Length: 391
Ligand code: GLA
Picture 1 (cartoon, rainbow, N blue to C red):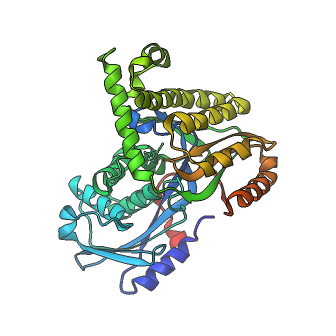
Picture 2 (tube, rainbow, N blue to C red):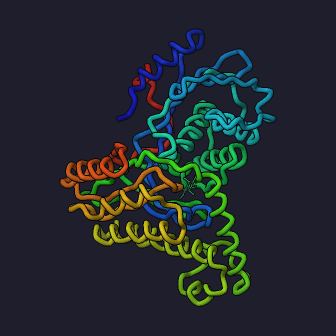
Picture 3 (cartoon, protein in one colour):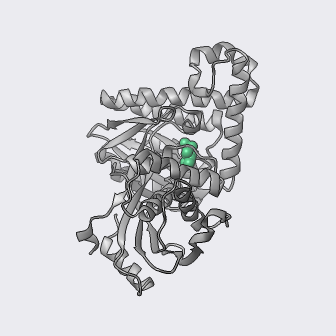
């Protein structure tokens, strides 16, 4: 359910009574349908932007400061605009905002002294890109209508996260938050940074299931995977020096030489090469409205993450295994960075109620936790929320 714009404006006024009338912006989270960890290997990914978004209400001030209040954390942060360029990350939610402010400054875009309130509907730590939603919402709010190319906006958000926050992420999340399109998934070519929209068949519903677990391995394991993929590239370059990333490696070539790649990088490479191909195949199956094939690719992708990339966990495997045994479910897989968060499920619309019931009962019985369900309808990317609705 999208927040009502007037509620956010009212919260802003309550928090910052002396500020002027705020402008309101939103940036969505995303659910990735297929192609996991393929973005930093320059392959393909296929996310959809969600109607769950992060909102930022902003008004300029004459304080010389950037003051940000997070309604979700009930916490305020302020920074002198002169200190943005030497700011250090604090391990807090505002790192994303400060990282974005720093990147805007570095791109030569003037940031005005402002009061800002942020509030998000994207669940934290669930693999639905709450961080990218916060980065992009803050970026559009701080831009305040100054022109920027959409791709530059996405890249700026990614730099804020990789260079300031310190998470060496790919481009998928910020790209999806910027380029989201109602009614379609976005097939992103992470090398050319082009995209095409892929409509999903009408008779399928995409439901994300939040396992409500997030294992703390997150960032360190992500870093490890990035390094293992680089090790695989290095080993493969011995056979073909033109290889720059795993995107350049076909499965047939890999099968020929894989024995010469050390075991762990070999497994990681097998996931990346096969999942990149699965994005292409899934987009073709979606266009052909072949739900069975789309479902098969989902499950194959999950097994590849479970056994080759080793980024799943017990609770997520349980949700996937339970889902694929339920009538009306075409396929299920983990989505996002891994080690918890959400699964994404493709199902027949008339199977949704019994799916929710069966999953909730089974998961509660096994783990004593109540999973949350999100109906993932593709939504538009970041932008202003119309003035009338925010008035
Ligand atoms: C995180 C990163 C993305 C991507 C996914 C895994 O969400 O931010 O860049 O690598 O994990 O597909």
